[in-house]
Amino acid sequence: MFDILDMGASGLTAQRTRLDTIAENLANVYTTHNAKGEKEAFKRRFVVLGSGRADDKAKAGVHVQQIKLDPAPPIPKYEPGNPDADANGYVNYPNIDMSIEYINALEASRAYEANVTMMEVSKSMINASLRLIA
Amino acid sequence: MFERLLNQTNAPVLERMLKFTAARQKLLAENVVNISTPGYKQKDLSLEKFQGMLRERIEQRDHGGLGSTSFDDLEAQLENPQRGMLFHDGSNRSMEQLMTDQAKNALMHNFVIELLRKQFQTMEMALKDRPV
Amino acid sequence: MIDGINSLASGAGIGGASAPKSTAPAGGTNFSDMLSKSIDEVSRLQQDASQAVDNITTGKSEDVDGVMTAVEKSDLAFKTLLAIRAKLMDAYEEIKGMPI
Image (cartoon, rainbow over all chains, first blue to last red; front, side):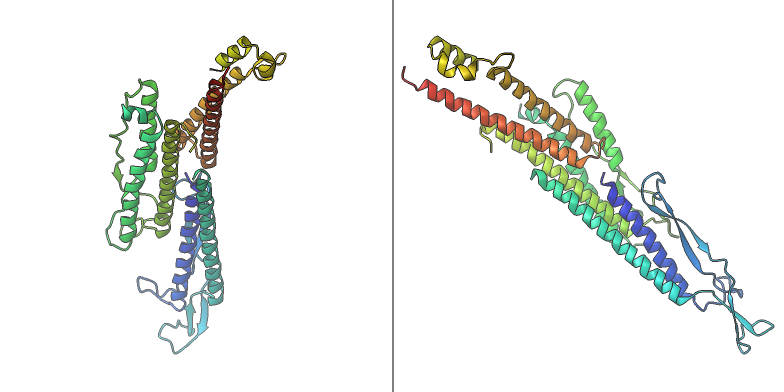
């Protein structure tokens, strides 16, 4: 019952996951080594959302289908003095544009707020129909 | 005699549901409090399973004689729900889902209280012989 | 009780005054039929409401507003019936107290 609230909750979880990946991208803007310590620029992550709830795809809602790595190539910058430079003096930096990440973060947080508002409205509608027999 | 009089109505079913929602509210609050506790397994009472049990007992009551079935022994089972995203420590906490479950549970609780109140009001009206 | 009043009226020859209330227009229903049908209807509304409440508590249906309106309708019908009953009792007391 009150399925609409579960729908809203799935939206909230999806938007929060988006914000989490954006935060991770922003934290790793200049990361040139991967977790194993090898020289590999951080690959930007982005979230793929699918419709249908995580626990039951037939129910209305949204879920995170997967968190994909951006296949775009890293950006080489000419820094011959840097110990990470390759033979030609270029260092590979992650292909993360901070302004794009900020705008995505704004969008995700607005969507989060919209979901919360929708749930509040639904709750007050249900409460109003409870007052019908009060 | 008075118990049987009250059992003719929806009152026993609604009362069991009230006990269920009250117990579930406590568990959900405990889950919220322990959201950052490492290794904590979330506890929940399944609403669907409890409603199934209620349904069976109502069927029994409808097919049996008057006053033959009681609802007093219906208890919901504690379980650890497995849905949701898993974190590395094996927990599936999601603040949004917990708050939503709490909101739904509270709405159900208020709803059942209103229905129960209406039920008792109707009976009082019939006894008093005057429209209240 | 209504039949009693009818017979009282016709027996005392007041037929003319009470005729519009107790005798039926051609092919229509009289008051006692209407009253017993109303009682059946109230009982039916109450059973519908009870069934709706059972359905929603056990999760068979999700129609919250339907349950609310069914409960309210049965409540209003019951209150109406009680009001009619009160009026009939008052009318009976009044007629009982009439000096003949």
